[in-house]
Image 1 (spheres, helix red, strand yellow):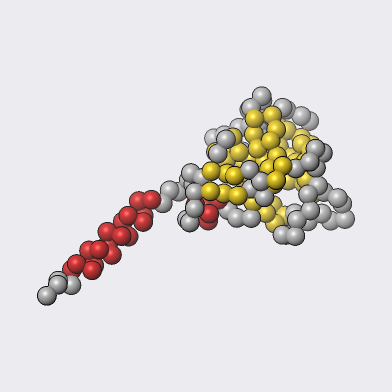
Image 2: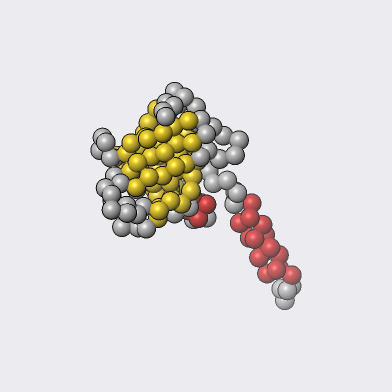
Length: 141
């Protein structure tokens, strides 16, 4: 006769294994989405502490997750509305995460996605950008 402790031990080990694979900071690969044609994304203002994008891409979603990436590392991120309010574009102003800054001369990507990367990290190591815009950061006022 099997001990009642065996199923509990197996469940406990499975729980520990699942917890040990979770990382608070997702280590994801951000797959390039559609490259946006020239002029559809413009940088209006840029400093080491803030960057403002003007985006002329039309989405059906009311809000999307925007990330500024250095490689596969998010520098700035968050949910932003995509409503146009009678214009042909919407604007997004992003600030780097605590302890980070935009650096002149570095190459970054603006990745726009449907989900928060932490949600995706629960089931996958890949994040799909629906649009992708690569740029070299330069301060602009």
